[in-house]
Image 1 (cartoon, helix red, strand yellow):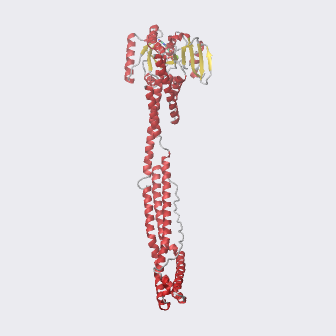
Image 2 (tube, helix red, strand yellow; image 1 turned 60 degrees about the horizontal axis):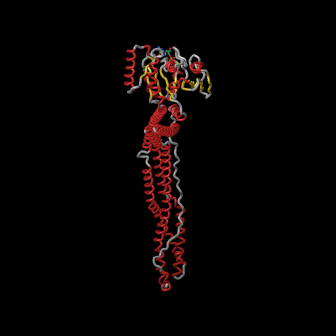
Image 3 (cartoon, rainbow, N blue to C red; image 1 turned 120 degrees about the vertical axis):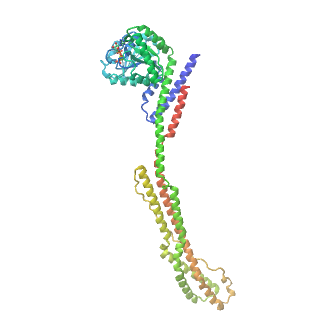
Length: 559
Ligand SMILES: Nc1nc2c(ncn2[C@@H]2O[C@H](COP(=O)(O)OP(=O)(O)OP(=O)(O)O)[C@@H](O)[C@H]2O)c(=O)[nH]1
Ligand SMILES: [Mg+2]
């Protein structure tokens, strides 16, 4: 029953881890997080292979790590010495027959005799790992009791051989259970405490191993152990199991304690321990990720704020689209309002001369029209229409430039207004971003208004000519002629006013066009700058989402 539960939970942890690892890989690529690569690799290895638990012996150089393993397995397999020796990671595990395999960084492997491993793992024969060995794997039948575990000998830390330090530190993420060897003659240095801190990221199982206890009296041993406990408590606020060992004195007794208290326990509960380690590593990896994402989030939030501030400073109360649009509209409307009056004032000059001229002409004309009232009226109307059209066309053609007062004024004001707006914008951009915009070609085109189609209007309110046959012309002709002549001033005024209205319509339309043009310049410029400022959009939302997803994953792992 417990096996079923175990297997179920094993599959679940592996599933959840697999999925989370994919997410982590994606986001590391997206946010260029490289520093988690080794942790990712360690988790990948745990997920891919059903490998043994790596019980790594770590510690300062010459702490007696290799000697301890030799003593534990009862065979001098690993090279030891008084100067820094171990140069390559060496793993020992149970195998039916004795064998040693050298794995190189280039992927090659070669099987060697157990007695020859010194040629690959010692500094003397493989200085700074010139032979490019990634790891040496040894299998021994005598390790049957530790099946499911792999003892890992590591190069010492803190020595002059930088390569040794690098090798061990790089390997750290793969640690399953860490045995931190501390020599009795150098009890617990700052480096050891630092190493424990580092190991805490990679494994829940950290054990202290006080080596070479034969160098201490029993009292001294107790003193050292108490010192360890106090220091770890103070520095790391935790307790760690402490084992003691000597390859020279009471070795069997120490070995027994280690086996029953640690190694056999690990071996027997291998699956449970394995899952615990996988779970721990995944949690640590995700916490690492969340840490980086937090930095990314803060940067992104700051960038958003900066951008917002820039935006605010550039688009201040003066550089404001609504404001300038209103200003341009007021200029246009104000000018449009005056167009008619301006044209009319100018055309007033034509009233008198035109009246006089047409009256005289009409008098001459009437003299020649010896016809009845109906015909007289027709003739008069035709004559008036022709002359009026001719005169209005003439005035329009010769004088129209004088109607352009408001058009020109609007052009000048609109141009001035957008130019000063552009100056403000330029100044703000230079102040905030330190860049000068290229001068803008905001030239407002004046579109020449079309000439109106000039036609005269009828002048009679009541048509006497409809009753012409009742009116004796000999008596009334003089009256009608007077009437026609008296109509001229009114006709002139009405037609001049109509001419003004037609031109007003066209000029105001042209002003409207200019207003639109000006607004468009401003609008396009502002939206370009706005787009540039928000183009490099912050990743805040995206990061927040990723953080939420990872936190969810972390919860699932812990559950
Ligand atoms: N007195 C005493 N000496 C020991 C004991 N274990 C190891 N030594 C000595 O300590 C020295 C270093 O031993 P190594 O096993 O090479 O130490 P190491 O930690 O593997 O060293 P590096 O591989 O260089 O990091 C050797 O001279 C050993 O003989 C012990 O239990 N008691
Ligand atoms: Mg060694």
